[in-house]
Length: 92
Image (cartoon, rainbow, N blue to C red; front, side):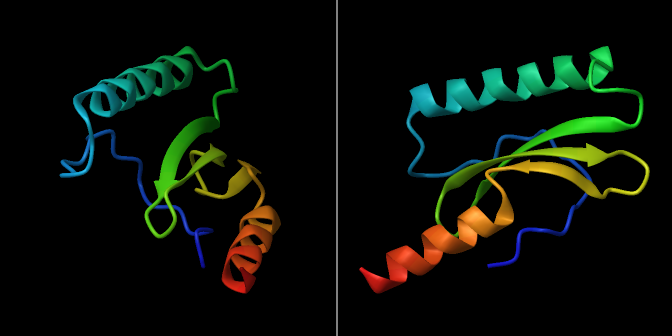
């Protein structure tokens, strides 16, 4: 699994047939919260918060990204934890 590359942030909520109206509403609220944090520059002028869901296993990932270089400054959970979880799931 490779989720380390960063693409420009898109705030559109994708239409997914398995998403309940409640989940869609929660996603919209999350998008608004991320936009508010990023516009406030509370994370600094050069950083932005990026929230995504890994489509392969539907895990939530939170990243702090340098706006200029698109380098991941911090990721929660870290990449090694995601790989460990995948390895454990394969063994079960």
